[in-house]
Image 1 (cartoon, helix red, strand yellow):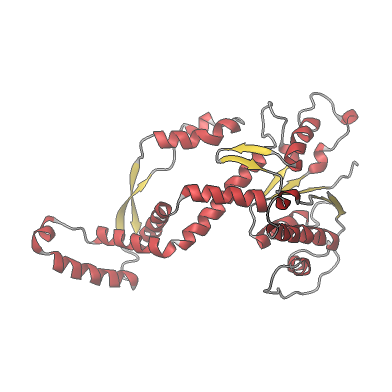
Image 2 (image 1 turned 30 degrees about the vertical axis):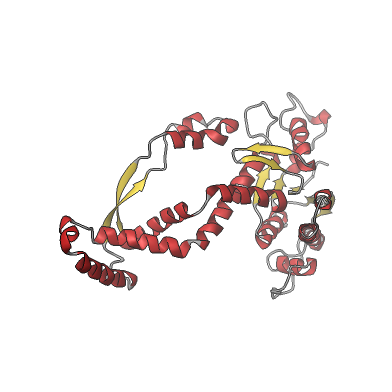
Length: 331
């Protein structure tokens, strides 16, 4: 594990990003656009990111033997520790979560346990992959949404079925042309949408019952009948709402979850802030050792590599990059 002391910023040179492959030098230059100074920290995270790229090009059992080089950043508040990690994750298009170590409690006590950060990371990855897949089916979803809006604007009545299908088709095509030209964008229509909110789930899953929250909401949501509500919206808004609905139908959520877990295990980045708050010596601790030594004991197996159960299945943490940060004034 690398330990880097973060210095207070001085100055930075302007940088124009290079479009080619991300070498450590290019990663540092990209980070220079947003963070002043901190050359050692930038170099360390750039090498860590490049090592991941190298690992992906190794096949067989050797790939599992290449472990990430986790990092500790030491420096006062406001010098860029969090921003370095956030920009790195954005640059790598990797799932990223920032947590405060001081907010964790030992497993078995009321509060968030350390495994919750991996569950949060998986949730972020699922949303990321879902967004990417929705972008791939956006054109088809928009076309299906357009047809549904046309059904609202021009419903098929009994007279159409009896013999006016050709006339109905011609009118529909003219309406489609006007719709694409934006002639109806401000027209109000009634739309039936599914209610997503289930009131009593929040009561059941509050108060730190995070293990209960992992799968209960999905299970109960699947068992309960779907409630629909009618909304009055403009045609423009209706197209957006229906495009989202159609996009959801077109993507395979099993594939989304599978890809999300894979990306977390191979590209995930966890930023542990305020790590110095749980680094106190035993002599400094009074009362139950719940949020310091206990958290350290729970945290170590995850950082070193282990398995964490999430609502989407087991996740291996062996190759997740952990970046810890703290001021360490007392130490």
